[in-house]
Length: 92
Image (cartoon, rainbow, N blue to C red; front, side, top):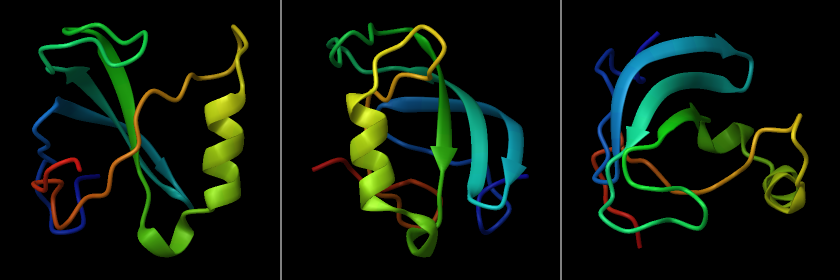
């Protein structure tokens, strides 16, 4: 359960640790936000779960809906970024 080419994903603002699970829409990884500034309510050093979804499985409507939902029992969406290969790309 690694990235598409078998490697642990990498991204400039997140440190990926281990896969948590996978399903039809992608894989979820345990990670840490390593940015130097808060990202909304996400503070540097915060533990996060990152879902890597193949481009052909992304639904813009689902992403917009998830971004607007605020409830204790719903996972909060903090960031959206596009990965190339193993998430070695940069955020815009």
